[in-house]
Length: 439
Image (spheres, rainbow, N blue to C red):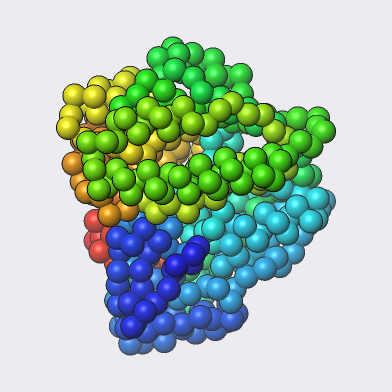
């Protein structure tokens, strides 16, 4: 399936393979006008509308049995404004293409997530983020948006123009309209030095605040059934460029992190009892390394092993306690978890339904290999996350509904009121939005 999803026999599947739908109609508009016309036609036929990206969400946020809009013809850079420090791109542009195109122009986003297969609109609409003391979310770097609303009109918004729409639509969940173009803040390309090193779990917990404060981008992976973590610190650097040598990079990023890891997960799926022993070995397989490169080559890495994922944002001050509870739960349970737990941070932002809206946040992501039963682990983890007023990532597995979400998002009603105004007939409805936003 590669990085993109496909439709086979009229059935659309997401990347994780856990969502399948059969849309009544599909369209791949080549222009904003064509897209607007398709939305108007669907309205005449009383049909719900959803745009999909590359299907990297594990929730059914993009699922529809109505009109499925594929944005793969709406790609490319529309405009670079060097004076303003912005780039405007079509919504279907993959992050990978955007990153490479910007690098050729001597520009870069300030921060990004750890994969770049997604479309810019899919990634931002679901709140995709990296890690950072001063920046994390991709949506927080948006300076302007263009979207087609339920009546087929094209609305542009920014901090100055339609600011109420801008506050919400940067992470709009596909509920407010179909995003057709995004203007991002960019800066001259810079170098990052990455320092990856193993560190005991207890030490990371004890020194977490210091590690967060001293590094622009700090993250770590804890290997369940062990007391081991792998930490990563990314900081701006004056250079020189010292990329990971090609063979070493292939060995560590492809062979160990994808090839061997895939095999390890196959063994773990077949023989769960072996997982703790494997975890102890694999948590020590990656040795310390330091390298310096342009941002997208440091922030992102290939992820070829298919998995399902749940991720929650908790208040940053609650991270260590939450993580210790998660470890205690795994240690005393019969669970066998072969995937590391990923921990990242984000500063508070001003986006209505951002997982970091109004509070400094830390993210805890739990994963299971695709095809292994994940419900027991995710349910137990979710119980811990929600006890700390956790906010689930919109594109990852969770069981929360509008009742819960309205309590952990102070501006929840602001979003639903805007939705009532922009989409009173719920043209962009689906089961997922009904659950998380109410009807």
